[in-house]
Image (cartoon, rainbow, N blue to C red; front, side, top):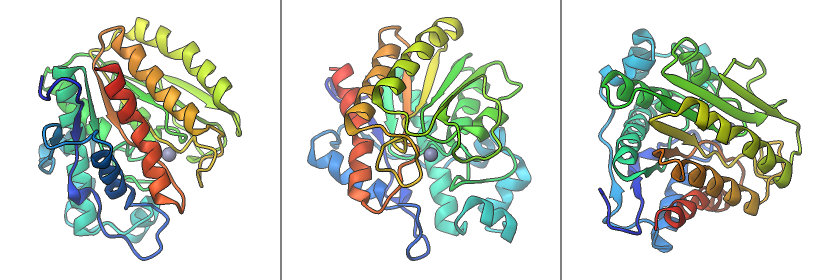
Length: 306
Ligand SMILES: [Zn+2]
């Protein structure tokens, strides 16, 4: 174990928060609030906090086109590429994307050791091989899955993406790679307008609420785990399916999100499948409230691994 009993490894860097233009709708500060809340509630301590170093270029090149990686690292993206991402890719934003990718690699490795680990950022699932989109620069889960697969640390990965938006970048990056299976359950009419094809897509009607959502998840996740028998699951625990989310269009309550997180973690745990968790989306004016929704998955993790 990398952490004392009763704790779950959390990967965090203060540089996960990078400055954005004033009033930008991406709530970058949620990563700051989240860590403050986790410390206040005792879920994050000195003994279970890990800090990533920036992902080396070779890792990024496994999931991304080298010319795109260069353009990000040298801040030379053109206007069109920048608009598609939705914020300027400054030196700090590029560093944050490298750190977040390395954090998800670390979460994968610690999950293989402990059964579970959580990156307090990540889930940049709209980043494609050769372009970024929808506030996503590098696809941290695709980078981490590629690093672990190429290094022979695992031979089969399942991505469970429950962010309200389809995990289109991840689906396309692994479209022809049978070593990584992609599952996305998302709102049918939300971004991206043109959906990719995951190995399993479950589109939900707008306003889908707790009971229908949880029943649909319970219908798909166990058979998928039984069929794929992955060595590791990457779970995108986006909180934007919440009813108060500014971009979500679904109607989950706090309790629904917390139940979802417990369900995914316990479904993996009872099958002895390690699970590495990333934060994914969560949008709105009330940033501490968004951070609190992200904290549910940490609580669920500690309860599942006492
Ligand atoms: Zn999202």
